[in-house]
Image (cartoon, rainbow, N blue to C red):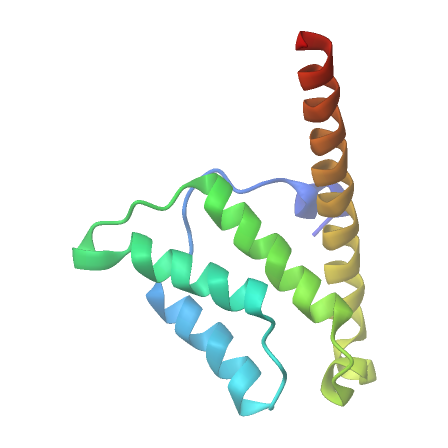
Amino acid sequence: MSSSKAQQELTEIVINKEDIDNLEGFFTHFNIDCPDYLKQQFATYRNAAKDDKIEYTLKDQQYLKEELCKAIASSEHELLKDELFSSVVERCEDIWFHAQFKRDLEETLDSTSDEEVK
């Protein structure tokens, strides 16, 4: 897959309850600390998916992806430092870097706009 293709955002909700269970299971199985911000994203999905009715948006899904990448990229767990995971960790670092840059930029632009209104 080309880098530009991999950078594209999803256009539909593709995550389901089993995916959330598997993500949590990965952290649990390998005794990797799951940060609170990622646990919160799992809870957000579960709360949105009650009663077979999903109220989960593409933005929510993108945010979960970014938070998962942040958790993997910042983990000090020895498994994620293994060469086997090097390409995964590198990709997560790249996704998190761009996500954080976008968030910081949006925050700066929002605060600048608020100041101009005053």
